[in-house]
Image (cartoon, helix red, strand yellow):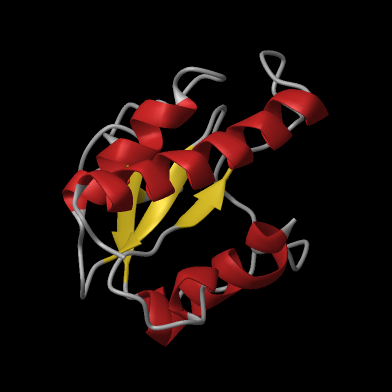
Length: 138
């Protein structure tokens, strides 16, 4: 639910978009699958790819829409969009780490479940840790 409460309102405010007639921020479809939000000011494409590759083993990756976007943002690689995470107050900005990402997955997909979403989050963490170990980063 973090997306509904934090990310999308910040994105709409950043982009100068108004609320819809019902007072809702949510005018785009919720992506079907797992995706990550990297930091546009510190993109780490190899790190993001390692996370996505690990998650692919347990669930599907959100495809872009017909315009090549996920939640209105252009994908930079499979399952990855980038934003200035600190400016938007996203999770990835909390520690100011060199390697960071915000993960998103929704259990309401017909191809997922609560357990699959939990497994995807664990895979994201292990994929990130494996990347760091393989790169010799401690």
